[in-house]
Length: 298
Image (cartoon, rainbow, N blue to C red):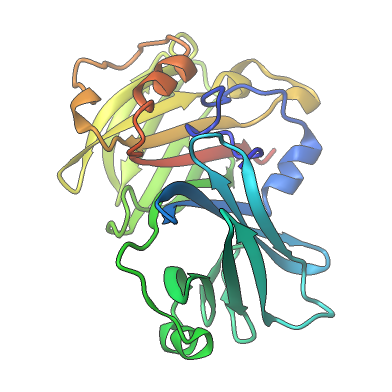
């Protein structure tokens, strides 16, 4: 969790860090998902990070305490070019044994580090399945001997890195078990009249004109009947140069307390949003956040 610049950190969202060329190369091979769960009645966050390098694909599963934001335990499954692709690991937290199981022997990947099918990753506590990822559900329950927990982990955040020249595309969902959508961010910084357009399923949802003056801001859109707050910070795109020209950051947030989302948040509101966003997330009940780091391919 310490390397995940999201709403869960003490400093809110880091939106304009000094990213480098090496950071861009490494970022291309990392996708992180966050799940909220209960361990012995205490709220925790389970981080599942998929990575890819020259040695192959890798995976890490970590558990953090929600109240202290401290790491409790973690297992790293290193790239498996020369290693087995299935196994298990026992961790301990809150004086409780936590078993992490994985089977990636028949896994299939797309262009990124996250698998698409043929796998499972399971987290079992007291013989109860609190988190199960992947499509091999029957195999997971047979291997672990666990039963489904009364309260399973909920998907609350995802961090992903996307690349493009003028258009940046990905698949996205905006809440736990939500519908999967095609998301496209269009921005041509080579022209004088800069604008930003965000599309959902090829339908324009919002446009920001005069982007050089409105390089940070927020706006509310409706997706699946839900109010989703969109934040953007494209400062590095417009004013960075050379190795210091980093990524733009886009955040799509569905608050657990939807009352804070207001249509009065108009385009062009250029305040720096980390602290205000942190204030809205003070509740123990987290909403959903999708954070996209958009890197330009030159």
